[in-house]
Amino acid sequence: MLNVDIRDGVARVTLDRPEVRNAFDEVVIKKLTQAFHEIAADSGIRVVVLAGNGTAFCAGADLNWMKRMAKYGHDENLADARALAEMLAALDRLPQPTIARVHGPAFAGGTGLVAACDMAIGTPQAKFCFSEAKLGLSPATISPYVLRAIGERAARRYFLSAEVFDAEEALRIGMLSFLVPAAELDATIEGLLQHLLAGGPQAHAKIKNLIRAVAGRPIDEALMADTARRIAEIRVSPEGREGIASFLDKRKASWCSPKS
Image (cartoon, rainbow, N blue to C red; front, side, top):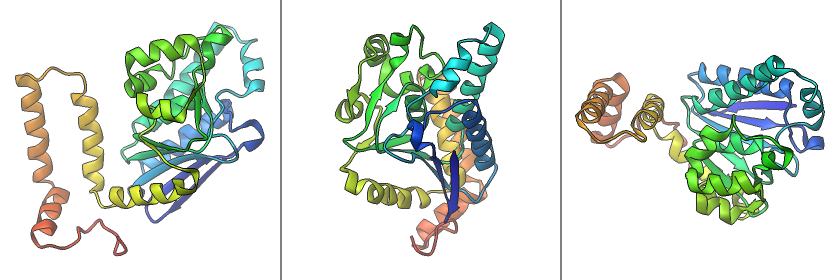
């Protein structure tokens, strides 16, 4: 159902329901939420890779779960939707850099998983669809992450049309960060991991907080003061001092693996 493999500072979280194209239900959502909270609390984990087993990355909601939801009342649907929203937020708020490995289709809620990651690497076999409108529904819980990734204009088109779009279009509008041949997918991820593992873990967490704090704000005195405070604090932190010292000494920083 869900595999979590932690090695050499990298947590690989893999959806493992290939028989249903890695569709999720309330059980998978709970397991993902728990996994993300545990990863967030583990200082030994430096980077997270989110993937899917089988031919698809994630097909969205499981059909049997949808059948159960159809019988729910408002309060049950609200609790169900809140659980999904909290899972996506847990992924988005991870202090570690996150990579979505999109080797195949990502539909509906599956696109939310991709968009909530810091970066997404896909292959030509990846396809995307916000299919909710054709079911008489709305992509509400995934919308904050998708809008952030692709912008309002693209969201208006693809949320409303519910059309399938390919990996090249996903790259163009920002759903994907990289598009590589399938044979090069894992090598590309490995190369990116080496860059990420060379960065300071506290710096990564602070950079993610910085982006959330700065995005969309006007460049005014308050923002200038906030960013100045942030850089001053990290410069005098133990990690900041070690990073500068290692650069000046022309050596690897203490958080770097000897292999890197």
